[in-house]
Structure formats: C-alpha cells, structure tokens
Image (cartoon, rainbow, N blue to C red):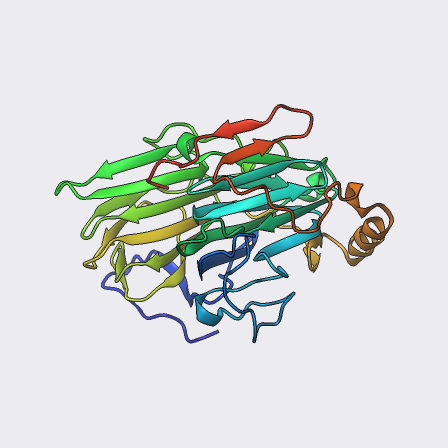
Length: 359
C-alpha cells in the first residue's frame, strides 16, 4: 500500500485514529471483511450485452486490468461474475450507476441499479452470479458500485441463505441544510440515523439485525462548503471507517484531509464534517460492533476454523449448494432496462425502469 495520506490537525482531541490510502480494495475492520469500489467506463454494447470492442489483450476469465477504464472481471463475453459459491457471510452491493443482473441457486433473480442495494445472506451456502449487461448499443454503459462483505457470527454462519432487495426509492435519506443553506444528503442503507426515517430491515440473520451489532452503512454527499455533524455511534466499542473518495478536501473536526483516504474515526463522539473543497464531496461510512471471533477464509468461504473451511469445500463439491437452475453460468435478463426481483416462491416484483435521482 502507498504511504499514508497526510492528515493535519490543530487540536489535541483528534477524530482520525488512522488514515490509509484507497487502492483497488479498500481496508476494512471487523465486522466487515471486504470493500471494493468498481467504477467502469464500459463502452457501447454489441446488441448481445457484450462490449462492442475487441477484447484482445485482456486475460479473459480473470480480467481486472482496467484497460481503457474498465474490466471484464470473470466474464467471458458479458462483464461480471458468473456463478460462484459463498458460505458464512453476507454480500451487500450498492449500485450507483448502471444495471446488474443477479441469479442464484435459490432460483431468485433480479435486475437492479441506479441506487438500489442487493443484500444476500450466504449462510450455509449459495451460488449466485452478478453480470453487468451492456444494454445500450448506441452510447457508453457506465457502471459504478460498492461491494461490501459483512461477516456473520458463528451462531449464524449455517443459517438458510436469504436474498433481499432494497429499492432506491424506498431507502431513507436525511437532507440537512447548514446555516449557509448548503446541503448534505445521507443515504441510510442500514443503521438508524437521528433525523432520518427508520432504515429498511436487513436480512433477519444479519449482524446488522442484531441489537448489539450497531451496524451502519451510509453514503454522504456534501455540497461545496457544506457542514454536517456526524453523530456518535451508540455502541461502546463500535468501530467506524469513513471512506473519502470524491471531492477535493475534507475536514473532520479539527483535522484536514487533503486526499482520498480510508479514515478510521473515534466512533464514540460527534464530529463536524466540512467539505472544504470547491466541488461536491462523497463518502461511504461503514460501522459496526466487532464480532471478535476467529476468521478463517478461503476465497468465497468465511468460517471460524480451517476444519470448517474444509467442510465447506467438501459440501460444495457434494451438493453444489443446491445446484444451478440456470442454463448458463452467466445469465442475463433480457434487453429491457427494467428493474425487478423474483424471490423464491413469490410473485415477481416490478419497479419503475428509472430509479429517482439522489442515490
């Protein structure tokens, strides 16, 4: 990792415990395992959901090159992540731009984007795919998302898998205007925020659903010059990371941050945030009470012991975590730019094609 970002201060009581540079994978803290920010400038599609340009020079099947500003990831023709297994944790996918096609071994399917959030509890085991179909053949197909892995405590690692959609237009937001009328908008994916409507329910077995978890997932958008007080976390021992990833400069309490960084903050105090730059500023906040259990990980399996990892591998070879009910490993859901979710055993839920702005 590159050298730590410079954080200047002018007071003894400092909010920033540690500052780390932002690379391809962002640093996380218990109970979070992983955070990736994908920002791909995909070109126009070829009418079959694939890029209408040559793929020469890419390592197809594992292309993380960002050549020309985008990657194929594990996709062969359509970018994305074909069918793969998970056990023992949760994936939370926040889509800021573009559309994602989800399919899984439960038979669930979805197309979502533009501020929507997909939350999957892998539990005892699930296979799913996340494909990025390039629907527009006349213009570029930009895609931007966060994928976050949230751990499960040992008692919940073998729960039944669960799939939830949090639709953009239902996700609560707090819009705060400071004394000068400058706006800060906080999008509340998880975790109660004073002044905002109650958050949508996370999956029932999630650490975010446990009262002791004190989990929060928020995004912040601040106008130039805007000020907003980040309230203290409720739990004693809760840890908090603020990822500053868009904008020129940020002040946290008395400390100035002049470059993009992952900032571990003192969680038990209120801190005044100020956008000290001339352009809008954006941050992602991840917060939670540590689960504080051993973590054993092998790729897509996260358990507590190496013996449990071996069991996960054996179970997957034997059962395929329920099998794969789709004709292909990389299914896409048609040419229409619609948003929908089909849950196991339930009627399909349709949403407006375009989510409102403000994600």
